[in-house]
Image (cartoon, rainbow, N blue to C red; front, side, top):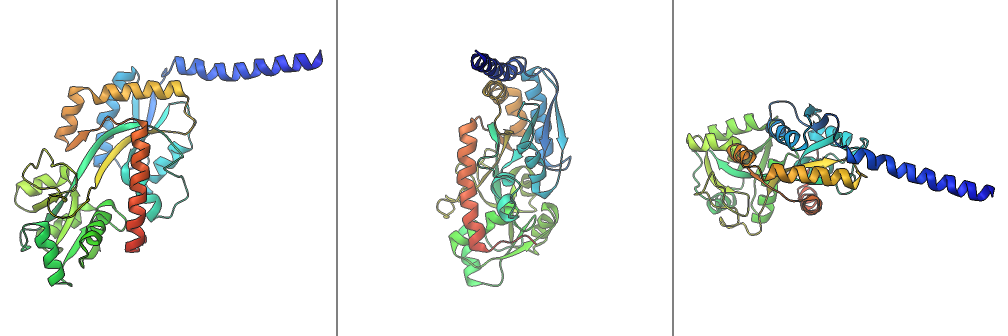
Length: 325
């Protein structure tokens, strides 16, 4: 009789343990949601996250508050997301380099991007563009590669720093083209761009949204975009593949991430809201004006992209012997 009572108590306890999350999920969200951003206010990740947060909040019927936790190339915020309570009230707005490059370059064991999150879905893609200064005597990627091969000590490329996505984008081109090119790291994109414009460095990769003003003003020349398709804002600029670098595709992205073990009901609610944001014409217009393309990929698409790009950058980093300084 005592054993029967213990079994009944155990069943009741299990039922209560599962009923509580179910109740919480049914009322989710009933208070503001925090959206962690791993970069300082005012940058492209932060400004995009703030626009996204407004639309996500509208779809959920609840306020979504952006919280900046800058540091370690976004990994501090992502680590906080990975270790948060999985109740849907703390989410991460993750930039692709934080999940596919930074853990490799910094040799971090804070989190494994391939298994320590519950991906909700993609938000946007963004394209990089290969830029040279007006003084550089090349007009195509092929001419740049040929120039590097015939002038092995003359071609340099700038970046936002060792291990930055635009550094590795150039290393990937260097490896695929088998051409000598010297990396010149800077403390951020802006000083690197200034030296491209002045001709102190030969070229650099930059995101389309910040590169376009330099291209339109004639201060820099675009040789190629890194996406598989041409960019709508630069329709006359070929892709790297069209320019003669086979299989070269580097597309950055932002995704909505949650802690591991997020209840399915909450994940489904967030996925539905994210889909509604992606389909909102006003959001699409805002992203296009910012140089982005809305991507409505689901959680499986995020996981697949992380796995594929993590493996790709791991090979590039090892081959180039990239080490954080």
